[in-house]
Length: 186
Image 1 (cartoon, rainbow, N blue to C red):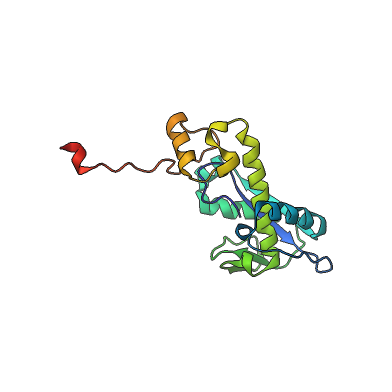
Image 2: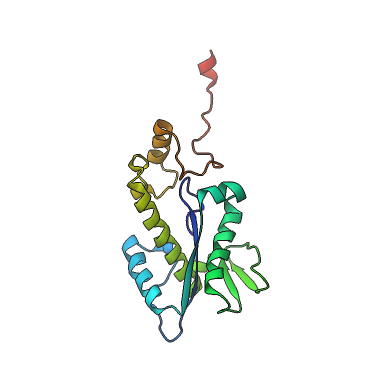
């Protein structure tokens, strides 16, 4: 999944079933790849995978369910699109809400171990980054074309100056709590 630690935008998850007859070289954890490498691999995944799907949870859903449950919900939405094409689910991480009656295995740092998880990681990251680029044009003050909604100093300064918008997660602490200095009250 992509976007769990962001202040704005959706959380996105992908599900991928690779075709063993069409190997894809260079699959790895999306965070270890450059943006250019990810987008090249994304195209190859789309062309060569047996099945793939992307699931999305909006900021409103994140505010309603919390980010962890929304991550799982986005995964479920991706699996819903793949249908009964699989018999076991591999999940990157250490927790998962079971999907129907399918057996699953959670794997910490699984996107660096299993190619199918790496492929899903790449699709989720590319989809989310493209989405943030798209909404940047409507809200350029937040610089989502650069920070993709993550809590950078520039993003937080823009929230301070302009407030939040519909793409921000209202259940998140958008600005750090300013600590009071003992000396300010003297």
